[in-house]
Length: 115
Length: 114
Image 1: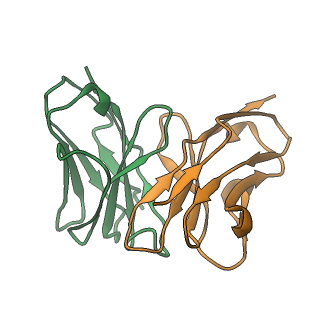
Image 2: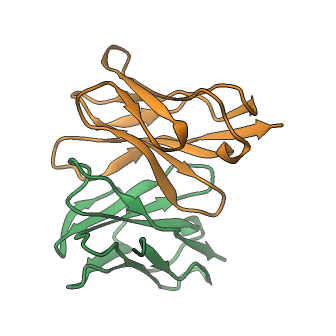
Image 3: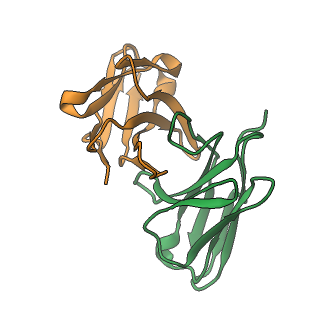
C-alpha cells in the first residue's frame, strides 16, 4: 500500500508569492493534518481536516489556509510568503480523528524555501 | 494547553550501548503519548504509542517507553543501539479533548559512534 504522498518534494518561492502544497492520504484514511517544521524544532500543528471539515486550527496567521477534497486529499495554501515560512511542511493521515485511539502516518514532507 | 519538553538536545552513544531519551509533558489529564523518529530528509515514523493500560510500551526497532504519571514522563529506551538508530527523536502529546493536534517536543538528536 502506498503511504502518505506529498508534492512537490522541494520548492523555492520568492517573498510575497503564493504556494500550494498537496497531500494524498493513505487509502481508507479520512483525516489529514498539516504541520510546519522549522529547522531545529519539532513540528507545529497547522490544520486538521476530517471528512472535508476543518476540525482544528493551530496558531498560524490567516495567510495559511487548507481544504480537503471528496477523495480525502488535501491542499495547504500559503499567501504572501515571508522568509519565516521557510520550513518542512508535513502532512499526516489517520483513519479517524487523531489522536483518539488512532495514529498519524506522516509523509516525507515538502521542503519550502522562501528567498 | 499541553506542552512537551525534551531536555536533551543532543546525545552521543556508542554502538551497543544503552540509550534513554527523556520526555516530560504538561497536561491536566492523562494524555496520549507518542515517540516518533526522523532520519535526515525524511518524514516522521511512529516508534510507539501509549493510550492506556500497561505503562510499559513496546515499539518497533527494539524500542520501549515507560509512562510514569507521577513524574509526567514518557522516556524512551533501547538496550543496545545500532548505527542505524542515529536520527532525531520526537516525543509528542495528544489530548482527550476536542483538540485534535499533536504537540511535539523540540527533539533529541542521537549520534551513534563506532
